[in-house]
Image (cartoon, rainbow, N blue to C red; front, side, top):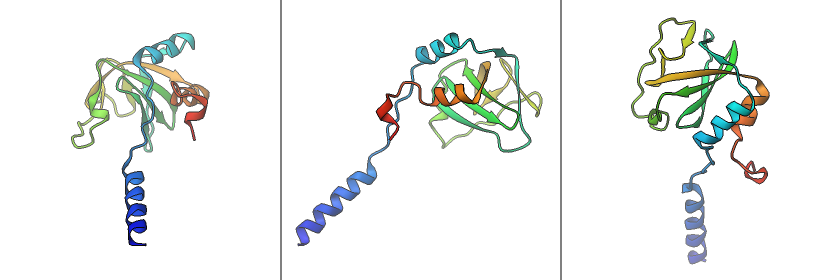
Length: 136
């Protein structure tokens, strides 16, 4: 009985310690998505008063959601700061109501391009690179 409980405990601990490894789309996949959907490139994105958030697509892209719209930010370089929460760089903004491409940063990474997204495009982008059975 004691052996069975020990085995059950070990299985439970092993199941709890495994990470959910979501498949992140590659930079080329997102580039193809931008091109095929003919996303509109913007010079700046309107930010909300509060409640703005972002969702990581991969190391080069994030979906930025504000009360005023949804945007895809492309970074100049791989943004490793998106993975590491131990050091958070302050955002640089020239205006608190706008985020400008080529001038402002998110988590210390310079934003190269900003694209406007619809809600459907943002949803599709979240699941890009995953098969139909991957969203269980």
